[in-house]
Image (cartoon, rainbow, N blue to C red):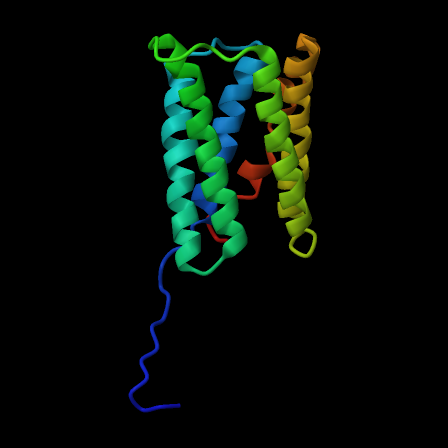
Length: 178
């Protein structure tokens, strides 16, 4: 080793608990609405913009600093998903754009389901908890897409009950000791 070479040790915290909790808690909250238990309100939109959105983008940037490509892609992508979803709901309310029709929202959710399914393949050589998170999220996105594309609210309700159950994989995978 060259005597002039400097090695910097990474002493930053693990960003995965922040990213997983940001996604998990925001998912549960929105899906309490999808299950028909609470109305869609500013509380859900604020959670989507701040914890699910900005919190995950921050976690993704922290993963980038740790050279974790998968974590960077996952957390920044899903953070931007939450931000885009909230903006998609807010723009029509502010009169800045027309509300998307059900088919458009269904296509949006279907694409996120396909992205999540591809991410699932990236978890096959990791732990079962991460596989469960991405497998479960793939099913969730596809159920939500089916609800919007078919016009059958039962798919959305099933997705809502599934994602708002106590068995929320992102939340249970977010051990602060990770």
